[in-house]
Image (cartoon, rainbow over all chains, first blue to last red):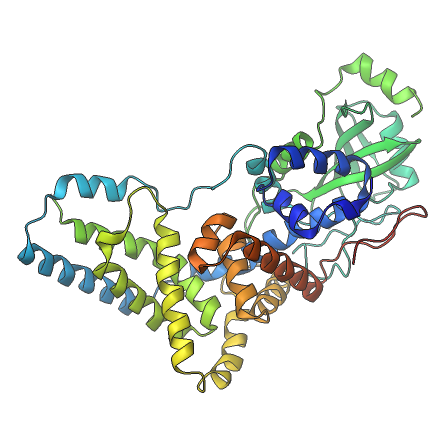
Length: 265
Length: 180
């Protein structure tokens, strides 16, 4: 599928969950096969997440006391003036003012909320050739962020063979892979979700899909680390959102998984 | 039973952190932003009857504040640049205890946002940071949705470029590059 079909505005609206259903379906179909579309969508998701993260600290700054005091004083003065003008029938208003939450509700519905969760915690997507380019801040020194890289041979072998539920060591002291599940996309393509733990690196939850016997990483997100920094929304939610967006089926049971893994595709 | 205006005032106070954040990103200076926030609150209190129940309070406040800022810009076209440069460094340093690497990352993103032109910056903040829909942002800014989308897409491509969030180019032999 040609990615020229989708303008930046369309892919951005998809990333933001603002696209109509029909076009959403077309983008989702393209995402299954077109890495360029995926990369462009990822760019829009990452910029949203990055902007939101970057300006979060400002929200946590204490509002100057003076400003708060002035606003309260103005409210009181304006209330007094009004009360003098005309006695207000307070009851209804008070309730009405308070009912809508002050926190902005997500204006979007449906798949968008899933994508929002994804955008909120999509940190870095893994690079090709087994290079795990994950960095703590997600954006710090990732000179370029790769989407959908080819999984390296060691990990590929694990993905080809290990059953879900197993923990497998990668190389010597290089880390551990925990196979979470195997499932098929609507197209029949086999995918696996797994977690990768490497010494000194944030844990990673990843989804890879196999095409022509080659595993391609479709998504990798950092597991939230406790304590410092601004932990993103649950990375597991992100993975779920992603799985939904690519039309993942239910996890295969042990037998079906064994057959699917053995079959060459 | 409390006075509705007091309740409105408390609602404003609760919303101050967001309002202030939007103001800081518009004028890139905390001092100017605090004055702007105060002026917006004054205006909102005076016009609290005009707030329509069931509509978004945040969008309504952003519109008031943003209109005040645009007015101010128009009035003092000459006074701008010097203030803006020092303000950039100020916004770029997030408070908080994030790790140094994370802080670097945030710094560069915040600086990149600061570097956007106002029309891209405001649309980016409203949608990506304050989570307004395109339609709500269009209403705050008084522009068509199509314009919101084209400015926002440009803002994000610029941000991606400035911070190194870039889509990979031609990763496999049979794959064409992006549309850029």
